[in-house]
Image (cartoon, rainbow, N blue to C red; front, side):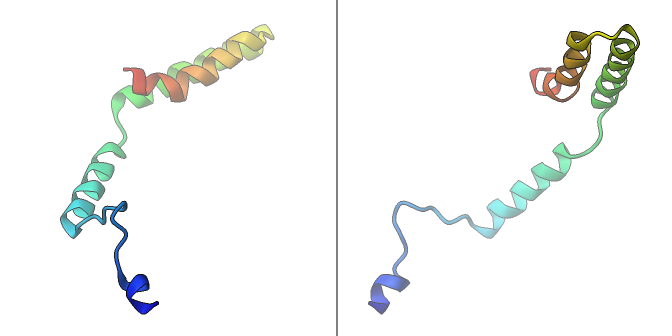
Length: 74
Protein backbone atom coordinates (compact mmCIF):
# COMPACT_ATOMS: atom_id res chain seq x y z
CA UNK A 1 0.00 0.00 0.00
CA UNK A 2 2.81 2.42 0.89
CA UNK A 3 4.54 1.72 -2.44
CA UNK A 4 1.39 2.72 -4.32
CA UNK A 5 1.07 5.93 -2.33
CA UNK A 6 4.72 6.92 -2.89
CA UNK A 7 4.66 6.09 -6.60
CA UNK A 8 4.20 9.05 -8.98
CA UNK A 9 1.36 8.97 -11.43
CA UNK A 10 2.67 8.74 -14.99
CA UNK A 11 -0.15 10.89 -16.42
CA UNK A 12 0.67 13.95 -14.31
CA UNK A 13 3.80 15.91 -15.20
CA UNK A 14 5.24 17.76 -12.24
CA UNK A 15 6.76 21.14 -13.02
CA UNK A 16 10.27 22.04 -12.06
CA UNK A 17 11.29 25.06 -10.03
CA UNK A 18 12.58 26.79 -13.15
CA UNK A 19 9.22 26.36 -14.88
CA UNK A 20 7.46 27.95 -11.90
CA UNK A 21 9.90 30.87 -11.93
CA UNK A 22 9.33 31.39 -15.66
CA UNK A 23 5.55 31.22 -15.17
CA UNK A 24 5.55 33.88 -12.45
CA UNK A 25 7.87 36.10 -14.49
CA UNK A 26 5.47 35.97 -17.44
CA UNK A 27 2.48 36.60 -15.15
CA UNK A 28 4.13 39.67 -13.64
CA UNK A 29 4.95 41.08 -17.07
CA UNK A 30 1.40 40.55 -18.29
CA UNK A 31 -0.11 42.08 -15.14
CA UNK A 32 1.46 45.49 -15.71
CA UNK A 33 -0.92 48.28 -16.65
CA UNK A 34 -0.61 49.20 -20.30
CA UNK A 35 -1.75 52.33 -22.10
CA UNK A 36 -4.02 50.36 -24.45
CA UNK A 37 -5.92 48.94 -21.47
CA UNK A 38 -6.38 52.39 -19.94
CA UNK A 39 -7.58 53.85 -23.25
CA UNK A 40 -10.11 51.04 -23.67
CA UNK A 41 -11.40 51.57 -20.13
CA UNK A 42 -11.82 55.32 -20.68
CA UNK A 43 -13.59 54.78 -24.01
CA UNK A 44 -15.92 52.16 -22.58
CA UNK A 45 -16.70 54.44 -19.62
CA UNK A 46 -17.57 57.28 -21.98
CA UNK A 47 -19.70 54.96 -24.10
CA UNK A 48 -21.55 53.70 -21.03
CA UNK A 49 -22.13 57.27 -19.87
CA UNK A 50 -23.62 58.23 -23.23
CA UNK A 51 -25.75 55.07 -23.08
CA UNK A 52 -27.08 56.07 -19.67
CA UNK A 53 -27.95 59.57 -20.83
CA UNK A 54 -29.62 58.19 -23.98
CA UNK A 55 -31.42 55.51 -21.94
CA UNK A 56 -30.12 52.87 -24.35
CA UNK A 57 -29.56 49.37 -23.00
CA UNK A 58 -27.71 48.05 -26.11
CA UNK A 59 -25.15 50.86 -25.87
CA UNK A 60 -24.49 50.06 -22.21
CA UNK A 61 -24.10 46.36 -22.98
CA UNK A 62 -21.73 47.26 -25.80
CA UNK A 63 -19.64 49.30 -23.38
CA UNK A 64 -19.46 46.35 -20.98
CA UNK A 65 -18.32 44.07 -23.80
CA UNK A 66 -15.80 46.59 -25.14
CA UNK A 67 -13.85 47.09 -21.91
CA UNK A 68 -12.75 43.62 -20.82
CA UNK A 69 -13.09 41.56 -23.99
CA UNK A 70 -11.50 43.63 -26.73
CA UNK A 71 -8.02 43.60 -25.16
CA UNK A 72 -7.28 39.93 -25.97
CA UNK A 73 -8.48 40.52 -29.53
CA UNK A 74 -6.01 43.37 -29.97
